[in-house]
Length: 276
Image (cartoon, rainbow, N blue to C red; front, side, top):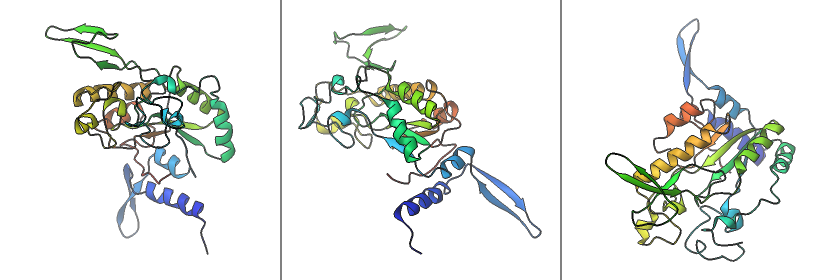
């Protein structure tokens, strides 16, 4: 019997999900005792889901298709077909026509019962207002905040590379109204705005140049910024169904487990990506 590509893909989703489980159970038979894997509730939910709607909606929507969507060809100049340079937050401008309820009309009509939105993709642009700050050299005269301790003075500016409205909250409200589980995609390792390549390397150091509008932060500074972002994502939007990182989790696994214990995609509830 021939199997359709869709059916095969759905079957592989279940099989790959079963490759990693978080608990085991002993079963005693008449002859012996055996140990079998027991999926968590999040893993069972993932296995029972035919497919997930992944919504790539971010700066690249208005500038350049693909990931990271931002590079030296469009960062400070308008690329062909773009609405502006990707370094300018105003290039992302869906606000007058943004209708996330319409998204879920399509998602539910499709039959998906989980939806994931790119809260931050490779550019580093955020779809929510963040309290994260950027470190500044002591010679900078930008919009700064100074914090003094007994030994040091830290000067920072807001992380302004973000949407003007909380797109994530609109997404969550529409998902909840539609009865659809929701989650966020956040690429931990890559951030063109902060000079991090697809693999997490410092792209500005590698290329020997920092473009206007980029911030060449240290690894410790980058870790602090990402930690604040993830704290907001996993604390401010209710119970997530899925967490996608699309990269190594760089030590943030315990935070995921603590803040979102019931979400799929955490170290406690792992599942393998089946492809898109």
